[in-house]
Length: 450
Ligand code: PA5
Image (tube, rainbow, N blue to C red; front, side, top):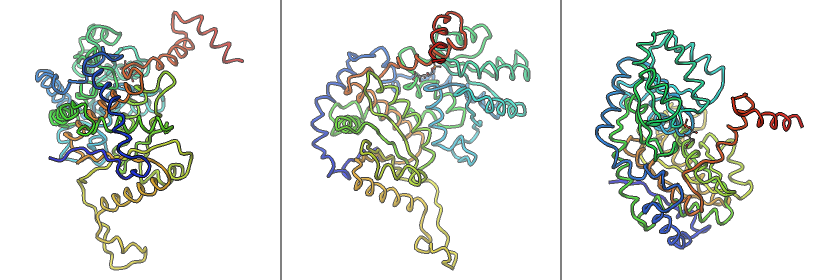
């Protein structure tokens, strides 16, 4: 069977594979810390064996809820931010389940999934509420802490719309809450109102939660086969249990990043040649940015969509400051065939491409760009994914989660906390006059006026 491959051979004249081999002792130590639960943040390792540990009962409960959402509604509004929405959004976009041009095979009987609560844009919420007035909809509100401001505001607004449209009783059947098992404002509200609830396990942080009900319920509701996805993740979990880099693509990727970071490459660009990868890149940015960016360390994760961005950021990558390296996502098998037509004339000078498949042209663009960027001094690793199916998406998600944990331990940070995220919240709450924050507010207002 095909598998994921991580290849640095094209950059052989910039760095040799033995450079990575020298990092095997660090990899082995990180592997030991992770698998023996001795590293920092070891209370958040529930994701590590999750593909094996998730119960059939839980999967069936998710599938039943998804069935009932599909029967009742045309639209599912997923409310969440950060790890509470990016994983589901990444999978839906990749499998075209959220696009205008839906792929029928993947979205049969699915609902249209719309997202809210990732920002506080009033124009968006106004337009969404207006649009929802004419739709049959269900809400899945997702928040591990149950107190995050952005989704809490969106939920209050959309719950009010729902209750005025369907009444309290019917709304109870149209609201699904995914949150902590016991604590938080959202859990209290769910108990009080009698909403159906799914649990985010205590030992799984937001950015590692896509294979819990956080991601699985919206994904199943869109008609995507979550069992196939979990099957892929399960295989990845098995494949990446080996501490030796030679047989472990996920660890090769972690070693490559750390090697380049030690050489002063502090920015990683994740480049894809398929726009449906946009949200996978957003998910990846959160995963690595929040896991590694702390204690004054960490690679800055950036993403570009080629060939689109070759006409904007391509110049910088080719020729700007040599502080970045590039990881290319390469899809081996394309699903749709689009040929450049033979028009019988050649007014546009495109006849050299006639009858050529767009996927082949895109692949040549990838190969040409990789060689140009390497000539420009950019180290490149290519991650080849066999195809865009639920199985391989599940596999890829686990690939990145595992490499992120290993990479974070190699870097010497706790990859499972996010202390920095609290700072903006403390200031915002004080400025919004949240009870208990009066003295901080006075300090901040004086600071702002200076
Ligand atoms: O990875 C994380 O933990 C964060 O990005 C959270 O997912 C995000 O802040 C949302 O938090 P919550 O699910 O508590 O609303």
